Every structure is written in structure tokens, then in C-alpha cells.
Amino acid sequence: MILGYFDESSTHEGSKIVSLCGFLADPRIWDDFDAEWKKVLDKRDWPNRPREFHMYDCVHGTGPFNGWSLAERLAIYGDMASLVCGTNLIALGSLIVVDAYENLDHQQRVILGQGGLSRPIDFIFQYLLQIAISSTRKYASIHVPPIVEKLGLLFDETPPAVALRYHELYQHIAAKHPHGDMLTGIAFGKSEQFTPLQAADMLAYTSYHWQLKRQFPSESDFDFPIIPGFLRLIENIAADGGIFTETALVTLVAQELINKANRAAI
Image 1: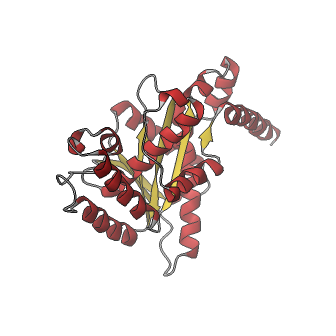
Image 2: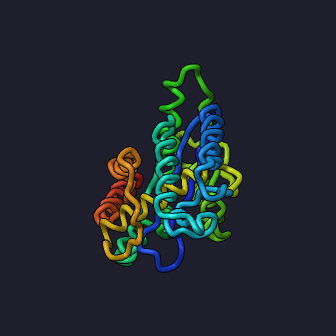
Image 3: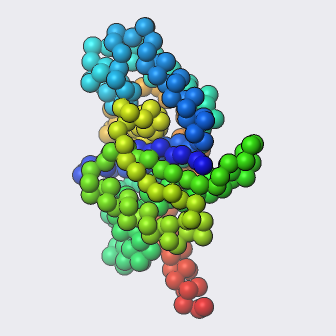
């Protein structure tokens, strides 16, 4: 069985970009990862032992990182990013430029809504779940020893309305996807209790600011360098088609029209 841990960044009202990112791995890898992550948190080099690693707090020196110097915050961020890059995790993610969706005309929105895509979060969740299913099949097929082709998903705690939408989308995708039977369900947990959710937070936050700087350079206050190995994870997400810009959404509208015509011809 494969376990995936995911977190979103900037789902609040007025956000220009929304991201949903995380990692897949089998439980054995996650157990080792959890131990190594806690070793970094426990290092005696830090001014205090953070209860968890939260990217926003680390960047801004708030919460458990209040009073830390920039050098200390950069050091723990570097340790965490290096750990992620050095572990056999499958990085997955998706981002959407909110204005790109809002700029679609009414008919385009109707077409996408008929395919179950009626708000920005729908695009990135549906994409993420579909690519998670595909990645699980591939991982299970090459893993030695063999593992059960099943996928369980845990998301960081999110507002009730977002969680409800996740469940609705999950049921919709599980029903229509040809390999939806491998899904074992979705659940929500506290990042303080699940270190993989902290890693997912780091990927979601960093991916969000990476794209924000590309689309809206003056909007980002992220002044940490992105470690090259971590940057490659983000660039791979982009290369896999995980970013919904205006061009990507218009292309998706065209694809939905083709799918509708094909269904009508049957």
C-alpha cells in the first residue's frame, strides 16, 4: 500500500494562486523519514526545539521560530529540504492561477462545470488525485518486494468547506476513474502529529511562491533560496502539467468539448 500526505497553500479569499502538493511512499519509507525528520527538529544547534516545521513560520520568524536568526532559519530549512530530496519520495503537486479561472467566460465555465470542475480548488485536487493513482500503479509495478496496489491519502487539516469539497471530488473521481478502486479513502490530520504533512507544507508553500514570483513578482515575500534539488521537484511538477494557467484552462475547455462530442457519438 502507498500512503500520500498532502497540504494546500493559499486557499484563502483573494489568493492569486492556490497550490496543493505532497508526497507518496510506502509505509516503511515513511517510518524512516519520520525518524530522520524528528532528528532534525531535535538538533541541539537550534535556539529551541520546534514542535513542528511550518514553512511560513520559518520564513517569517514567527511561531516556534520566533527569535531565531535568519541563518538559523535557513539552516533548518536547508536540513529539511535536503532530507526530502535524499529520501525516495514521489513528489506530486498542482497549482492554479485563480485569475486564469475567473477570466474564463460564462460558457467556458459551464463546460468545465459539466466535467466536475466548478471552482479553482477542483482543478488541482482532481489533477493531484489522478496523478496519484497513476503514480501508485507505476510504483507498485516496479517495487521489490511487491506491494499491494492501494492508495491512502491524508491531508492537513483544512476549513470544513474545503474538506467537504475534497470528499465530494474524491467520490466523483473514484467513481469515474478506471482504477479508482485502488483508493482506500481520504482523511485529515494535524501536521504536528504527522511529519510527512510538514514536508507537504514545505513543498506547497515553496511551489506557491515559485509560481507567484513568475506570475506576480511584486506579490511574493519569500526571500529564502530554493535549494537546487528541491527546485527540481517543483520544476518536475510544472513539467508534468500540474500548473493551470489561462492557456492550460482554455486547452482543458477544448478537451472537454471533444470528450462531450465523443460521448454523444457512442
